[in-house]
Amino acid sequence: MSSRSSSSRSSSSRSSSRLGRSIALHLFLTPLALIWLFPLWMMVIFSTMPDRGIFSPSIELLPHGSFLDNVNNLQRDTNFIGAIGISVSVAVTYTFLSVLLTSMAGWALARYQFFGKGVVVAIILGTITLPYAVVLIPQFIMVARDFKLANTWVALIVPPLFNSLGVLFMRQSFSMMPGDLFDAARVEGVKEWRIFLFVALPLARPMLAALAIILFLASWNNYLWPLLINSKPGAMTAPVALGTLIGLTKVSWGGIMAGAVMLTVPMLVVFVLLQRHFVAGIAAGAIK
Amino acid sequence: MRYQNATAYRFLAPYLLIFSIFWLWPIISSFLISFQATRTVPWRFAPTFNWGRLIGDPAFFNALKNTLLILVIQVPVMITLAIVMAVLLNSPLLKARGLFRFAFFAPVVVGEVAYSAVFRLMFNLDYGIINKLLNSVGLPRIDWFSNVTPAMAVIMIAVTWRWAGYNAIILLAGLQSIPQDVYEAATLDRVSKLKQFFYITLPLLKPIIVFCAVLSIIGTMQLFTEPFLITERGGPGGGTETLGLLLYRQGFRSLNFGYASAIAYTMAGLAIAISLVQLWLTREPK
Image (cartoon, rainbow over all chains, first blue to last red; front, side, top):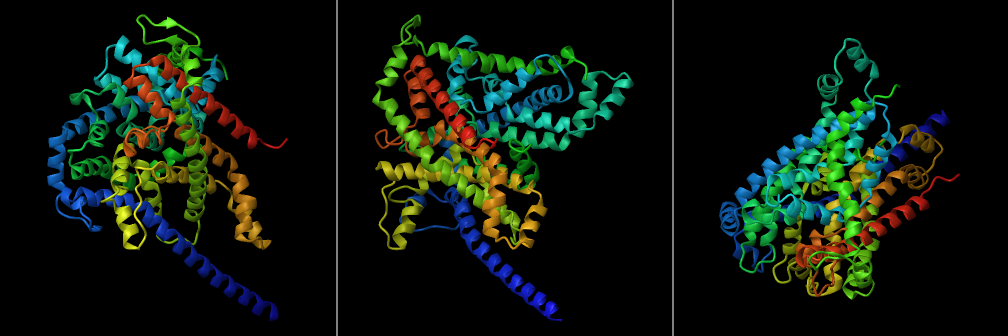
C-alpha cells in the first residue's frame, strides 16, 4: 500500500517535472527558431517592397505587392532570367553526370577487391580535408588558358565533378546490400555493368535521391568557381549575375531581393518535400 | 574475394580521370607555381620570390589574423549552438518538431549570394531592420560596416546562421545512433538529464563533433563570399579581409598566380595542422 502511494506520488512529480521541462524547452527553442527564420522572412518581405519602401525609416515586417515590379527591375539590371536558365541546365546536367560517376566509383570500392584500393580510398579521404583553394588556381589556368573553355557550360560542369563525400556515401550504400543478389546474377552470366545498372542502381534509389539533391543544391548555389570561370555577362550563372549587382550604387535592392527569393524559395520547397532525403544526404558524410 | 582489377578500374576510370586532371595535377601544379615568378613572361623559377614576399607582407598577416580571429570565435560558438539544436530537436518532449527542424535546417539550402545580400540589407546603417529594431527599443543604432569589430561580428553572425543547422543535421543523426537503453539505464539510476548529457551524450558524440569542427574550420579558413559581398571586398579598410579574399585579389584581380598559390598552400598547411591537432586532442585513450 505504502509502496503504491509512494510510486504514484513519484510518478506524478515526474510528470509535473516533465511538463516543466517541456515548457522550458519550448520557451527556449521558439525565440531561437524565430530568430533563425527572420533573415528568410525578411528576404521575402524585401522582395515584395518597392525600393523607396526598403529605404524608408519605418519598420516593415509584412509583405507588400511589388514582387513582379522587382523582378522587372532585376531583369533591367541584369539578364537574370537568362542566368536562371543557365543555372538550371548546368545543375541538371551536373547532377546526372555526377550521380553516375560517383555511384560507379562507389560501386567499385564497395564490391570489388583490386590492386591499389587502399590508395584510392586514402586519396578520397585526404581530399575531404584539403582546402579547395589549393586546386583553384591551376584549375583556372588549365580551363581558361590551356583548354580555352572559359564562359562555356563544360567549364561549369566538368571540374566540379570530383567529390569525395558522395563516393563514400555510395560505397557505404552498396556495401550494405546483400552480396548473394549480385552473385546470383553472375551465375546467370550477367555482365558486371548490367548488374550495376539494372540490379544495384534500382536498389540504391533512396540513396541516389539523397545524393542527387545534395549535388543539385551544390551546383545551384556554387559561387566562387562560376564567378571566376564564367564572368562574361551572357555566360553567368544566376548567383554570379546577382552577385555583380551587390555593391553597385544605382541598383534596385528590391530586384536583388527578388532574385534572392527566386534562387532560394524553389530550394526551400524541395527541402520541405524531400526533407528526409536531404537530411540523409547531409548526415551521410559523418555517420558510419 | 578474388582480385578483379580490370572490372574495378573500368568503373573507377571516369572518376579517377576527373580527379587526375582537376585535382591531382592542380595540387602538384600550384605547389610548383608557388616557387615561380608569374608576372614575367615566360614564368621563371624563383624559389624565394613569393614565399619571401609572403613572410614580409602586412596584407598577408592582416588576412591571416582576421581569418584566425573569425575561426577562433565563430567555429566554437556555432558548434556549441549546433549541439544545443541537435539535442533539443531530439527531445521526446518537443511538439511541432517539423516546424523547428525547418527553422534551423532551412539555411542549409540558401546560397551564399542570396544570404549575403539579405544580411547586407538587414545590417544597413540607416535603413537596416536591425538598426530600426535597436532604435525601437531605445538602443543606439550601430554603424555595422564602418568599423572593424561590428563588421567582423556581422560576418560571424552570417556564417553561424548559415551553417549551424547543417552541423545540427549531422549531430542529430549521430544522436539518433546512440542506443536508447544507455539513457534508460541512467534514468533508472537517477542520473540527472544534465549529467546524462555530459557523461553519455558528449563522449559518444565526440567523433562526430570533431568531424563537424574539422569541416567547419576548413570551411571558415577559406571564407570568401561573405567578406566579398557583405562587407564589400573585406572592408572597412581591409578589416574583414580573409585569406580567401586575399587569394582572390592576388590570383584573379592582379593575376599574380605565384603569390596566390603560396597563399593557397599556407591555407592548406594551416588546415592540415589544425586537423592534426584536433585528431590528437580527441585521440582514443590507449
